[in-house]
Image (cartoon, rainbow, N blue to C red; front, side, top):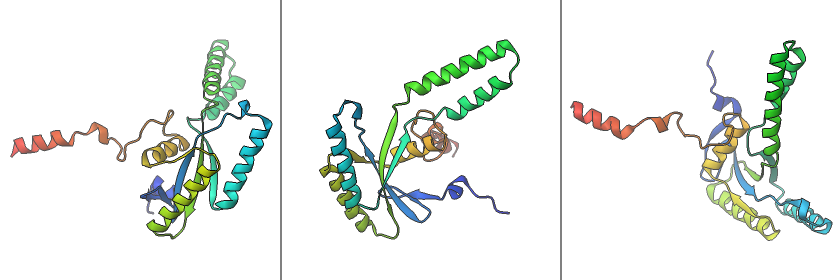
Length: 195
């Protein structure tokens, strides 16, 4: 039986010129600058909603994503709660309660750490067609008062690392695992010295 890589299991194929290819489709992502609606009047909030509806009617292929911009602590909190229910030793219970409070505090600090994205999915378009649609989407979104930026490979890798739980804070991930610890130049110097 042939083993599948994680990349194959999740359908990820490659980074493209503008985004990523997964399951035979290309995805382009735009990061949206969030708006603090708690300081807006009801009329301004309605206007924002209306502008978003207009964008979605102009660009029906647009998809919306709301992501945590840091790792979620919910699974850990659920585990600690389960352990608290089962634990009989008062000293261990006290430690578990301290762990739970710590996780709760971290999650509260990061609760406003959200990332909002627009995504466009392409099926068989050429690079030129993709480029034209990206510009159309960019223009339509900007005309309706949303601040956006198309995200590139480093930001996409960060987003995927957070989603798949391989990074807590979203630090940059190497293209090849461990490459930052390997000195190719030093290796060539050693090879030349041996010959």
